[in-house]
Image (tube, rainbow, N blue to C red; front, side, top):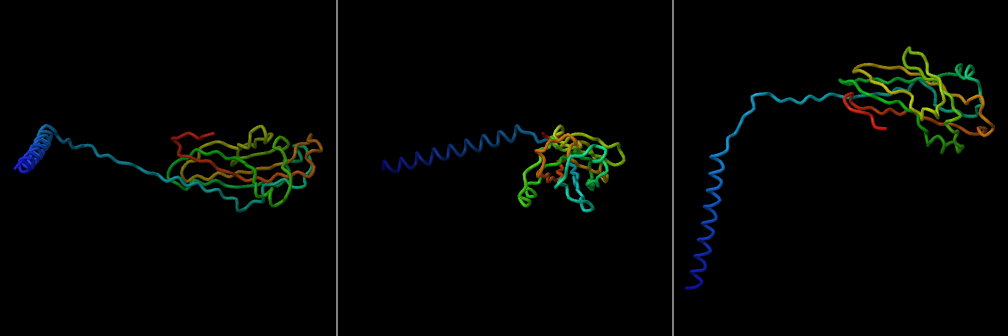
Length: 189
């Protein structure tokens, strides 16, 4: 009989607990009001597509070259490439020249220090910028390119005229790298 009383008490406690939970749920529902938005929310997504076209150009390299003046260096054949934004939004970008490690490995050469490399860089029909590659840490251009816009660039590299004999038998192998983001964000360093 004692066991029957225990079962009855347990069942009674479960019943009270269920009734209490139902009471709280009904009370909460009675005091809660659902608000429907009358304004339409929309999310627009855009497409960011940047294409670097290097198909009509030679390799970015300084192989078996000697120091020359800026006047002579500017007569060298430029490395040309295009950056096209075929997306639907403008993009901020940064064009950099970086060391092409595979070129050094394949060639088995020692690396030419950037402080010995002069450059001429031109975007579209703008006046070319001339300087020392080491001073800009390889950053050629930072800008914004609109949707459906194409920019054309040319780059010439040469060894500075006052370089010492340390540059003998050293090479430079480079490649262009594009960092890009949507125009409402910032480029990281």
